[in-house]
Image (tube, rainbow, N blue to C red; front, side, top):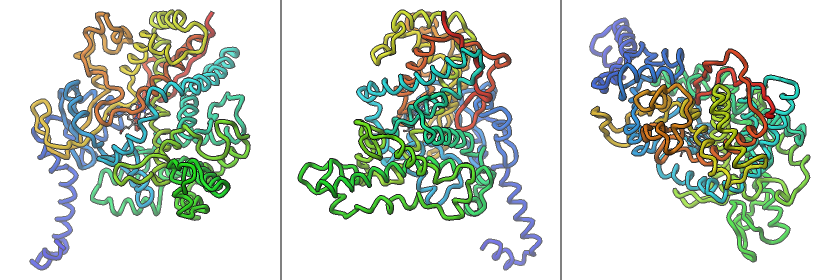
Length: 599
Ligand code: HEM
């Protein structure tokens, strides 16, 4: 339109083209973002790339720490075409996290069904819809539920110990981070699906089907962590740097996905298909029960049905509904199916089916589908606040997917970092061993034990301080705010610099790089010097980590059990630990240790 007007006013094609090129060059300097936030200091940012160069070179956690040292507790970055205001101050961080309940979006090129799937995630949704999801999740983290997970967490640790035993006997070096990853996947997978998922390599109880599914789920989760956002597909990077091209790049991305995007989609679909299969089995089972008995304990939406009543399932005539309900996600087009040769997207459903066939019924899980008490079972019975309706299958699939993603790598990394810190600090390790020996001895820990180990609590917190798996929390300003004297407009993208705050000598007495669990032991001088709110590994406010207690319980049980039996020698050349900052901060080359049996 605009160029036509120019032509009408006598401009030549050459002049219009020159104007276009000049506009593109100017746009690359982010004039709007710079002008709007000119009062806030921060790195100038490269042409088009903004602050990305430093983030890619150093990792976001380190780049943000460097900038905080240079510009102070409030500064701005240029990310994509937008400015992001970063705070590195405990009180301002709290203000940002408490006041704002919407997260900054993760760069993505997903469209259509894929975008619809993403929009139902607890991690990325907002407003009332997010609150209804969070409410539905909440009972999984009530004290009674947490107490019930102790048995599973102990049995998952049994398998880990088995693997460590074998390595100790052979004097073998193991990547304990990877082993923790398999263990946490075992725990979150089993909790989410209500099907015991034997994802750990050394598990003698696992069948070939479980080995295959477990291995693929872990590979898929790893790919999702490493490939989501700008570090994944080139299409995502292009959309991020040139947001005005978004309608074009998203379409091209879906039509011509590059290898990274294909991997990412395959990983997503593997997980989605696994969940879809479970839901499908559950619905089919419920429909079969309904046909046999005249009524069920639950209708197809998962609602309880009183004896003698007709369930919604029956009245809707949904006996054959399972196939139809799942069709959008279990039937890839031939093109889609061909996109992912490594991780075929129907593998999840296929492997789940094989698993169901190979596993005999048990009292806890008398037939195929979602087991009572599992996360999926809970959600199938929940209603959304937005419309009072049950969650759709797509929404349910996303919840299980998000549960796996949020709960798998974070906890594995936290555990790995704790072993790393203790191995490098034998005096602190000795103190922990004494506490474990005195309070728990050689038996399996109970839920009640977990509150009686203050030094273990401190060790875990201090490891999370030095190595927080999430380097920043992100928000969108709900209204105009004053941050440390700087005016920030509604809609501004905000970040709280957790890693940097955790390492700032202003907030931590003595050397902030030193591992000193006493900072978290009440009554010690180190603890009294601690700045409240400077420790934020689980975020804060309405979007704080919902799995905090679950993760802490799981980690403490695993730590008690492994330190009852072993100490660990760090393989050489790992200090300082190299980190990789993608979606989370993880150890770049794993954590390599030799387990040494305790005397
Ligand atoms: C040590 C392990 C973990 C760490 C360090 C961690 C850290 C975090 C952080 C920093 C956030 C963002 C908070 C914010 O924006 O204020 C978060 C959100 C979340 N975490 Fe965790 N997490 C861990 C384990 C878990 C586990 C085990 C689960 C589930 C089983 C889980 C589920 C979630 C969910 C669902 C959210 C999004 C909450 C929302 O947006 O309402 N996390 N986590």
